[in-house]
View 1 (cartoon, rainbow, N blue to C red):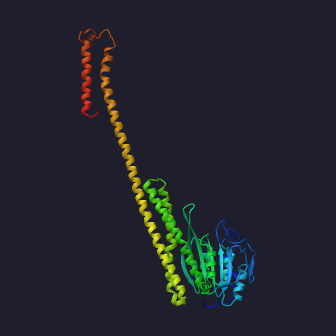
View 2 (view 1 turned 90 degrees about the vertical axis):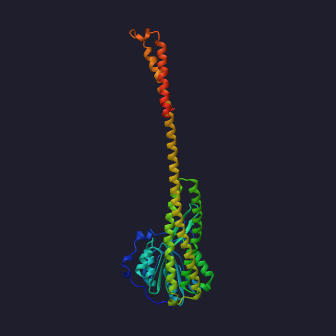
View 3 (view 1 turned 60 degrees about the horizontal axis):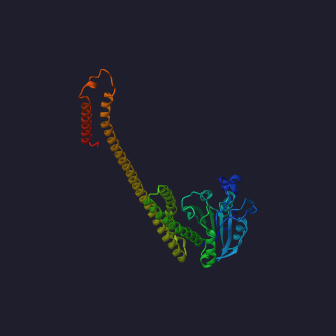
Length: 395
């Protein structure tokens, strides 16, 4: 790593678009229950060479390292900047959680960070990327964690500035737990002594390792969904859709990392990266490639499951329609039988009703063969109707 350039912080007019506002600063406080590495209670405002630094409650941890060991834990950004100037060959590692504009402005002035990178760090919802501005690397990462209680994937965003003698992390979510990364690096001073690139490796490794539980959780979800699909659970379609959306986000988090790490590896010789660190970064690249392939497989599997579910739902609907049609057909057959017998019984009723009217001027009433004729007429009509309905399969 090259020696840090001594410079005096530039005036605020270099970043006129970064004027701090009270409303914006107040809106960037930590959320309750964000997990490990939560910002400490607010500290008093400091000043950097006469420039006010407002509200440093977003500073999770700030430390100065030399030869892989912590030599100072300054209280606030201003003290960290001073201590770094006083320690030749040292490295500062500053962790911020949803910082205010004033805090990012002070860091940008101190380390001469590019205004475009600062603009990106102001807001979340950036795509994973790696950009180089002179001697400074700007890396955007999307971390992920699996929430067992709700069976969902929660995504966080991390912005990392890596310079010759500094590492600045800006978190916009609960993941990843950078306190664990710092503890790991401090427990291996020989790795931390390799400088800011080693810290970047450790952060990349932590983010990628954090994908493993997510992959396992998603695999379990897919197994459960397959069971629910063939069991005919009506709520499974919504679950497939929601998991598919999460896999789209997961793809957006993992796919760019493959190209980013290839870019880092392509610059090993140019920037004189330590050979041991090269091996570590290649290992991270292998894990990223494997994870990206698994996520692609998950999306493909969910697409297939959704198609199978649609087919099964269609088959179930067809079976229900067929059952309704069969029930309607059977009902129609019963109605035809009832109608046929009603017609057969109606004929003698009609004849009997007519001859039961007892009008005086009905010649058949005084006919000796009237009664046998009426019975014969009823029998002939009934038999005729029966034969007709039988031939038409109504009976």
